[in-house]
Length: 153
Image 1 (spheres, helix red, strand yellow):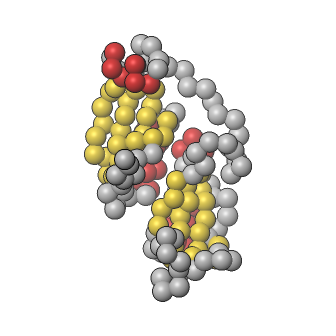
Image 2 (cartoon, rainbow, N blue to C red):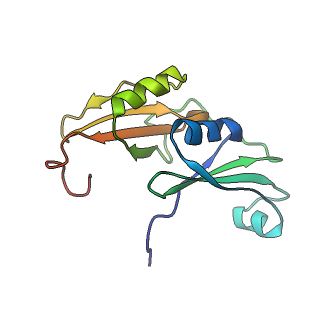
């Protein structure tokens, strides 16, 4: 029986760039930073003689992301990503002050698909940007908490 959601894992090409984005830009905190290797790790992921740097970062609400950078295993370059690409599509954060966040991240050089937009069907403003390695990141600000549907808060 599933008790709760645990974390998404994101394979990154440059751990320092990923830490800069998720910690410096988005306010996560590094909780562990270690090297995974050995028989257990290789059996677990189905590879041989592999090492990876694993960094787990907490978001302000306590949920964490697991960032993984392979040290001695060639990670194929992903093709141009699109919102319509198959696979895990994006990660999403609930935020306050979406317009200020958008301006700050644009000033830091983060690429957005669009500026924050008001939803046609829910009382929210939302936008997507590209994180390191073109991972899609969504930000959602609830603009009217009293009229948002259950399950979408």
